[in-house]
Length: 186
Image 1: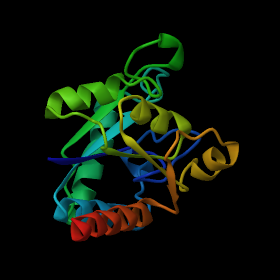
Image 2: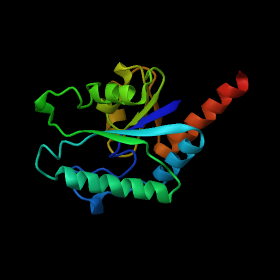
Image 3: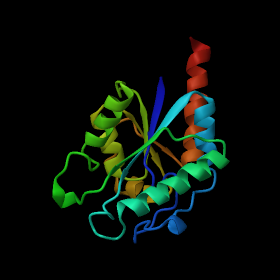
Image 4: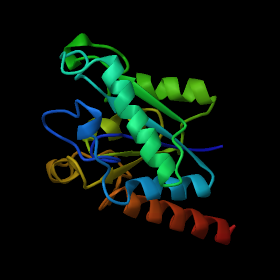
């Protein structure tokens, strides 16, 4: 099984320093949903892993988060895309949970749910903590420059082997092209 793990805010949809607190505030980045559809067509199962501390902060509740994710699923389906699962951490950084990225708990949960080893699985994020969580469990890190991506790139300290792409659509182009090149060389 081919699996890819995507962060949500700043990768699939526009991010906000004020948090995405309602379905109305969830707006896809142009080309992101079509990129997910291309991943599906290439045989990838797409999973989202997202920190959602807005719940612990009292900015929105689980019902609202579910409504936001329903809008994501509906928009993805309209673009011909399918997201297999959405994993989220509702905690604050101070809660010291294992699921909040950069800790790897959420990704370990994904590995258990899908019964896969994450070594070599692409993980896409716009922040260092997204990439660190994946790197620790053997994922291949991809940084997109949407969301917080430019600040993350400029700050440096990226995990070894991180490739940088303008957005999710460009990252998927790169991934599918390099996968085809590897298959052709075999």
